[in-house]
Image 1 (tube, rainbow, N blue to C red):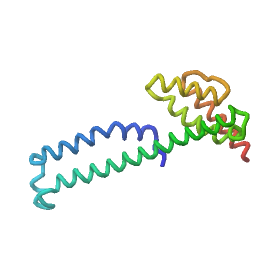
Image 2: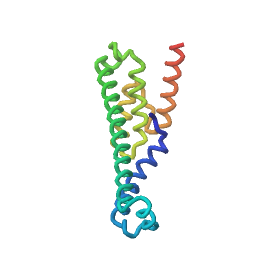
Image 3: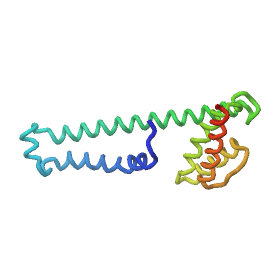
Length: 157
């Protein structure tokens, strides 16, 4: 499942807040507003159990995100290995435009990183894949990627 960048960013920003909320619910459990009513209705440990359920659910979400990111990273590495085996455009793997575009998609997404070294490495590898350098701005690389995807779609028809 692909999440929008805004949703992914919100998920990352919410992680510490969720964890702090769980911690606060457990530590301040005796003083939670409405706690007495909840304990009377659902049992003495309702707040602690709720916090544990929320924590387990969130850990499972984070685990799923870690698996997704791992598969993306493995896909990038695989695409680069195939491309390198093709000697930068001379071999069979390099002739596969889907492999090349998959690696380029991931690199273009990584161009939005706040880390200068990641952006520099992505730009270098994108220039290697594209055979031309479109600069430091991700928008230029996204336009190049859209053009390449359009060419691939047109060729498939």
